[in-house]
Length: 103
Image (cartoon, rainbow, N blue to C red):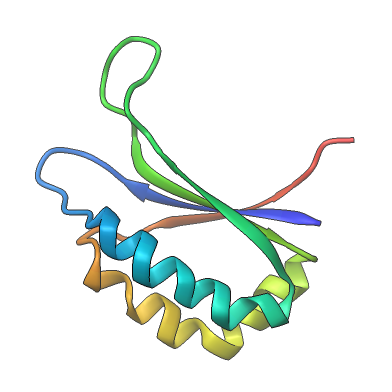
């Protein structure tokens, strides 16, 4: 199992439509990728850092995939549609990181 972090930068003047993201984009991700190894996801919203400054990422999606290969195959199969939807909810580009669980 791997955890894919999709991290959307924050900052003054950035746009992020959380309603669209939660009601349209993430259900699309789930619909397309559940049969390709997606075991679920969580969405978290950044609101601060320990020193009180704005967080570097305003929203993060944490997707649990069967493997890094399964994520790569899902992105290959439906990436154009999934990533093409990004401008519908934000004017930023996410940073994507593949994580392994510590043992």
